[in-house]
Length: 221
Image 1: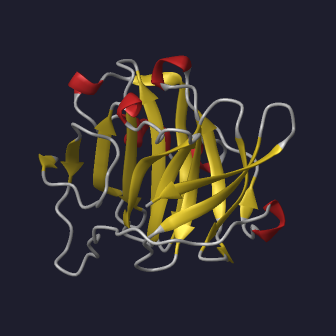
Image 2: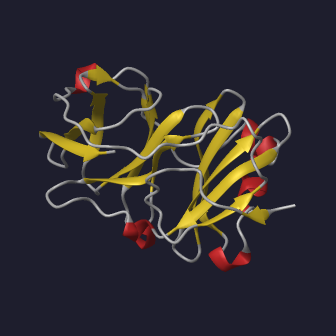
């Protein structure tokens, strides 16, 4: 049975969230509040695990009904899944991390344990509240914090700015393009970034602008 509980993610950018799901076990990891530091720049060639393709889940996910299950997790007050469907942002260590948009212009994420087909965390909120800092094209959409599988952060890049590489303190990080949000939820591109454990400070992000020019940006965790 679904219940409301306190968010596990430190620094969660989706404000005014409703978190529903089954209570985590006593040994579930918990997030720690991040603190600032500085880090060097990153070039596009520094990025290791990158998937250029995103969008709604397909194939086996549809066959086993993951989209229908995940999309029905939030309460009706958050609206229904839009035609864009549900996107699989990350699959690791027996968990699936999903993202989708609703008919009430909210963005939702869910962490689901595969073996028992059970939601461990569901968060919905207004993506407009996750605004970039002045002069930046990047915003934190969710995290940074401890997912049930790994440390992560989900970031959003302004329309026309495509991520080409991400690093932390000079070390390239694995990242994945998830989907482009609809106009009602900012129209930004969403990326899932896998972080080393207890990562703080700044991400150095290499972007490609709409006219093909390389641009460097930074995002504070």
